[in-house]
Image 1: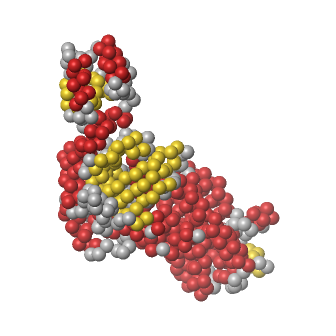
Image 2 (image 1 turned 45 degrees about the vertical axis):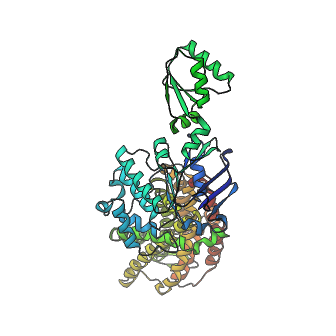
Image 3 (image 1 turned 180 degrees about the vertical axis):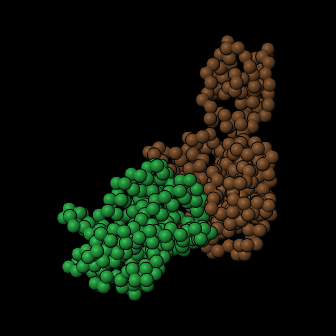
Length: 308
Length: 268
């Protein structure tokens, strides 16, 4: 898949907001039929990056290319290919669900063909047909998100931006959105996704770009990103302060950094070799070993390192 | 320059079309205020206050009936107030509470089109309102209450449209600046109402200070320009003054609106 030319490619994106460099040289690429997960803790620059990518903000430096063409030469043409589902609901409250889709279609040229049929298709596909005549505020959170995604698709875009599409939804509604995203990927849409839910990123993303403090700190498949950034194993242990100090010193001498703590338990990402060393160094210690996940990565980036 | 030419791009028309669609959903109630307001004002000012001025008032060296003086002023005042209030409250609600603009900006609509869409919509709505007021004035003329050159209304209507664009650009400036809807009182009481008073819409400006201030008030030139046309004096220098002020307002305020709203809406 990655040998194909990228649908969207950004190089060296920089953005200053309020005098602060919030995006600092971000590179990323998204291919057709691929979900690119854009991850990072709060303030990492995800939403700003996304907003530059879909033309809401202008980059201070860097280039954005769509199918190898510089989008700044014809932003309007580029935006015709984009569907955007923002983090917050931005429905048109003066219109019904159906009218929201119709009015969104009127904001694109060339005009989407056969809008009435397209709207009907989307209402069916997103299970919104029952609510077609209702105002969006009458919908539940899950159906509102469905409407947001449906609206982003009304003009048949080739690239879809989903900014935290399932935030605030119950598990059932989240799974329903996942199914929809999966179906859109299968149809060949490129999808750029930001989310705070690591299980969601892991399940949906074909590739991840991880941001921290405005910079890309890792990129690749979820598995390779975890391997590169965390190692193959995570040791979870609870110990007294004395033992923790000894372990911290052991980690320090090997240059392994500091563990992150959750509710008093330490989580130590280690490679297979390091785990073997750890087991030899602390034979009497009781601990659990589990595979790393994106939560670990997220916490490693987001939490301040805990002191011994 | 691109910001100014955006007025003629399809995206600006798409924004206007959206507002028109909303308006037409409630057309039966939306038409009432502009139809009833001139009747109320003509009764209150024209007949009520006018009864105390049986001999009329002095205007450009001749006597005119007060009701004939005030009717053109009503058209100017309706132009000013409708345009400003639509771009103040209507636009603010769409920007802040309904988040309509954010939704539009995720499409091929750019901020410059949103701004022009709001300006053109306010102007279109204002022109519709003024046309309704003109119809009411025609009825009053038919029953002998007024004596105006209403045949010149087709000249007045385009003047109203362009003036409304400039007044809407002024209103949008405040929309971009006020932090909450409660703060709208500041521009209304400090700018809008004073401009309305120093405009010769409902009474002539006899005081030299007010007359001096009014020379830079586009509403004054609009009121006097319309009055000259409808009272049979033809096109006056006020229309030239109005054209100059409107050009300055549109040339300065629209780019300023875009700059202020870019910061406010996009955070850029």
